[in-house]
Length: 82
Image 1 (cartoon, one colour):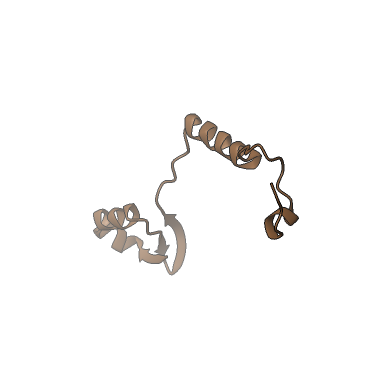
Image 2 (cartoon, rainbow, N blue to C red; image 1 turned 90 degrees about the vertical axis):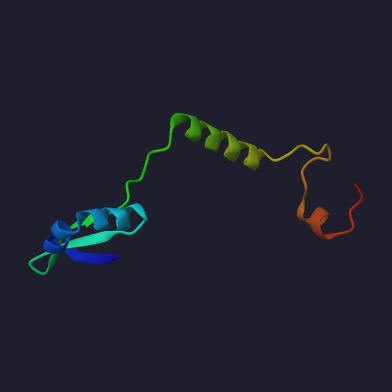
């Protein structure tokens, strides 16, 4: 995180915005103390994205049915016959 003074920000607002667009967060100082923060805008995810994420998480929790039942620890490490 970088710091800039209000005077520097006023003189170079376009450069500051370019830095923020590139992902940098700037602390803005006035009279030797931080008074504000300038950071990239975090977009909210769309409803379609949230629904797809929820469906994917549910699918991963459930797993894929291979027709052999639940896999146990012994099945993973022993010479189990399927």
